[in-house]
Image 1 (tube, rainbow, N blue to C red):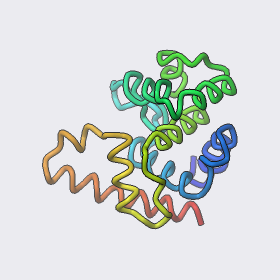
Image 2: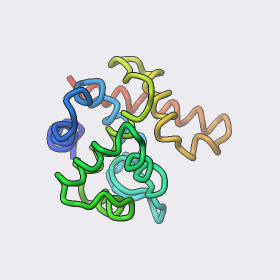
Image 3: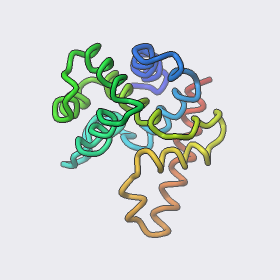
Image 4: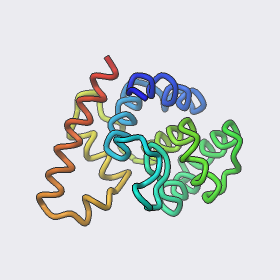
Length: 168
């Protein structure tokens, strides 16, 4: 699926389920860049046998559970789950993320919503990177050496640029 198609058929439909204050170009851009960073081959499963699922690579005990429990996201998560026909239980949501891209996009947006800082303005690559690090907390970064961290940051710049192009 192209990034343009992903935006039109997955991200925008997911955002229409959520409150209007969670929609807009900054959210769409951050979601596109994040899925490119997390699941660039659109496998929807951490390859080859990891615990993360969906285009935004959520783990059951991490992002899924966090979104379902966070005071600023739990009610929106219940609404999203109701709309997508899944009970708001971490195990059930986690299993569904691999097969329901709209649910995955909604959970990804809610994870961003849980961050206390506003979404970066489009074009603020470093602010987008910092938001990604705060919300996704990638293990490859936290456990990586300086060279691995630099490579992940370089990839973010490339992915962010691709996401910006898809927004045009």
